[in-house]
Length: 356
Image 1 (cartoon, rainbow, N blue to C red):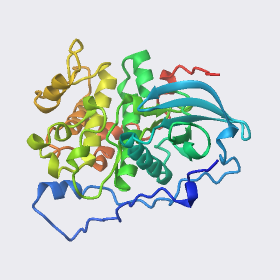
Image 2 (image 1 turned 180 degrees about the horizontal axis):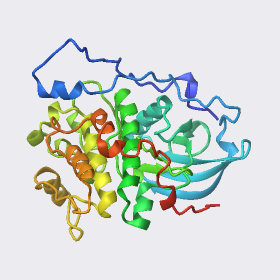
Image 3 (image 1 turned 90 degrees about the vertical axis):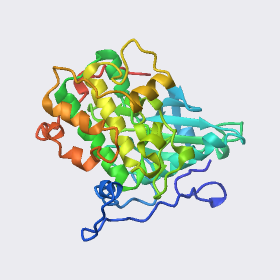
Image 4 (image 1 turned 120 degrees about the vertical axis):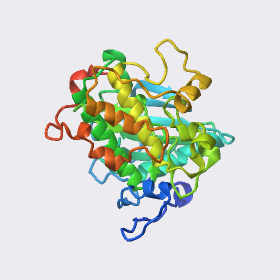
């Protein structure tokens, strides 16, 4: 069995050329609005060459993991709750299967593996190891990848909303701060998530939310890729991704799309339903495109505070040049209102289900 952390079969490492740090100069100036917007991008953070757990309980063999139950399906794979027999810990095992013709799955899965190896943040679901299925007997149909992930006992934000429908503003404030901290870290590494939505925000046993699933994420290298612009979940896509010609998507700051998605999620938490279309409307592509690209300014719920309303409006600005940056939002009064009460979170809203 071969562990794909530093090397793969025949010692050929998974490779990904991340762009070098580009720190905006304070002395430089430009009249271009898109350059001004990008100047707010956080400085590139140092990243480990490989995401390796150096603790004594490092996972070296898939055979040490006992599958207990299926946690979910989707995107060509299955997620299991597993138990490590040696270090007596629980993990989530994400198994992706693809045959020789499944380039559409293989390429993003390889990129996801490289991203997960590099990120190390308390706001991102941790990856403990990545295995090549083709070298360890996990599949007989051309291979695949298995990701050993941090087990998030509380499920997802989607699960929480399905149970409670709405969340109070104080909880949403803490939630927004954690998501923004995660995005700030990712954007500092030039990584755009591109699929921020409730089911990709997972909750641990402390009620803390972390960003998960980098299956459609993108490493920004300074050039817009039209063929790759529709990756993700259309309901949470920003106007410049849905209709690049109308909203200047070809020159867009790709990080701004994550801000839009996050804003939609926060408003959904307060309302208890997807906010861009009416509760009775069918969320097909045409309806979503009209709502995202041509819809009127959202009517905020009367019960919402002025801080919350302004926060969401700054996120859901259709023109990406005018949309708030992650750094700006981290200093927004709505996010900072609970800065001294960081213990507030989703713990009281999660039904802890022991899955054996």
